[in-house]
Image 1 (cartoon, helix red, strand yellow):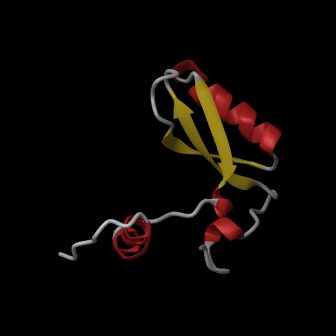
Image 2 (cartoon, rainbow, N blue to C red):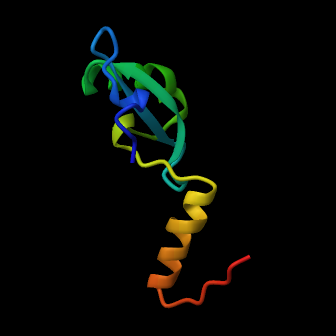
Length: 95
């Protein structure tokens, strides 16, 4: 979870917010993160994302960057995959 000093939680000078952009190129492809846009509202973020990525997308998803949980490295190994695997009743082997 982002801390209070995380820049994604701080308002920008113009009141804009960072939005993460995900797209699907075709209906059979998975969604993938392609970047972010900065905008003061969801409507304006949608306009920006559409302008930048619509040519390559059959679907676009936007979400506020400060509401995205980002896991990587040790976070995934220690929390994400271990807990999910253990919950499923599968034995986890530590390396």
